[in-house]
Amino acid sequence: MKHIKKHTFILGFSALLTGFLPLFSFQATDSVSLEPPSNLLVAQSHSLLPIASPETPQKVVSKVLVVVTAYSSTVSQTDDTPFITASGTTVRNGIVATNILPMGTKIKIPELYGDRVFVVEDRMHPRKNYQVDIWFQEYVDALNFGAKYAYIEVLGS
Image (tube, rainbow, N blue to C red; front, side, top):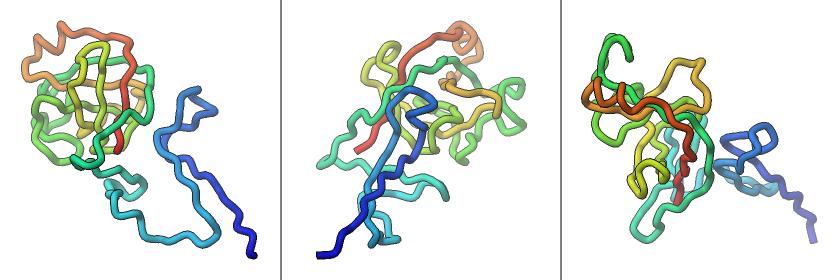
């Protein structure tokens, strides 16, 4: 019988550096297929996101403490295309910007919004780490939101 070595790979945060659970992990053997499983979607060249379906409801795969802030579509808070996100979509309710998760990742902020689901479709300035920015239609609403510490729940299938 051939002995197969198993290796565990961590995708996402380094649990050792952050003290939080990793976002995604999987085990591979010496005979690894280069094709991703059919329930995964290549969202960016370096990330894999689970595809949710009614048969596979999304569950919390990680909790991360972040600073939650707000922004609106003003040139002073964005770039010269304030209504287009970094992923190329038009801004709308439920969009968040962050640098710590892949585009398309779904999150919840239960302490502030209960079961409401947000989608990462925008980015922040590179110096912003462990921060999530919620899009608001009105500048005054974003300003009044302020900054809060809260746990985000990263969702997967």
